[in-house]
Length: 111
Length: 123
Image (cartoon, rainbow over all chains, first blue to last red; front, top):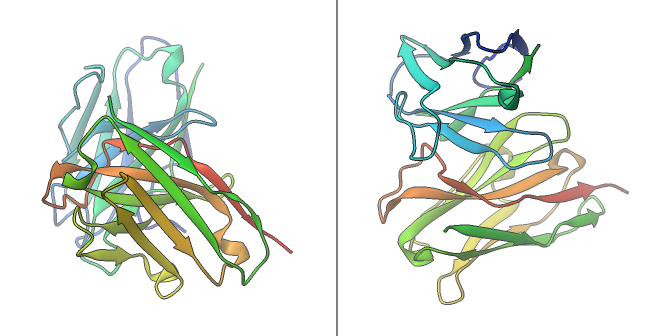
């Protein structure tokens, strides 16, 4: 069982907007603005999409945006495209012996 | 651009040892902390270890403490993960990943990743 909780799967149609959730606790997501999101296509290394809750690295599409409320972080993908079909992982710093936690991942299917 | 090229994976018996390497280029390796992250087959990501830019600080996830050692050679721009007393539960693709901030450990996101190397622990 992963430390952060993500839905196992979500789906959407091209052009639609979808939101992926990531739930933690007051020791990780709720305590710090240190949530990041990664996209991983099959057989590939993860790629950073969002860091520190809302920041997007250069080169990442503005269709990806992040937010947080309490112990839950969210990744919104607008204008869904076929290439967005992938696994998405959230991560957070934590004040525990395991410093960096990941969610179990959400598989996004573009219908 | 940043490149992290990994090597050293393979099949190993339980209880044995293995060393992974991650050769860095495209940035001043000795100025940044580095991590290892793993992914068991069909599973999610798991942070494994971190080493500071100068090797002075190391952090590990609980399940590998006392068995794995992260190290670095700043002269040759290479990161290592020495894995000992391997267990079947250690079977995973191991990724090296770069901490984003100069000298200071961000310890909260990874801005570049290696291609991954598969470690299979099996008798």
